[in-house]
Length: 115
Image (tube, rainbow, N blue to C red; front, side, top):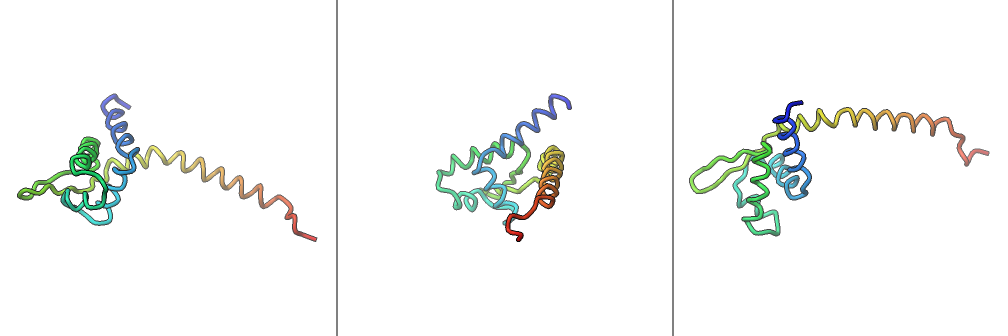
């Protein structure tokens, strides 16, 4: 992986590390493109604070901004999330294999309540 790609991946993971930013992504996923004010209505924070979160998401490529008159409309950009999923996939496989192993072990253990 080259430095540019690693830096972009780091920005995505850093953006996802914050609960407010994950909630913004959820709102955009479920509600489609929305103006800043509609997003801000979901949070108990001042609009400039939300704007900082939106900037982090923009810099990570997770949202895009379009101006419509005086409004800024934000849209989810899911492509960087595919990279996260690709990174997580081996861990999913690891845990799935571990759970299968645990299930097999439990199936072999005698039940304590048998007469």
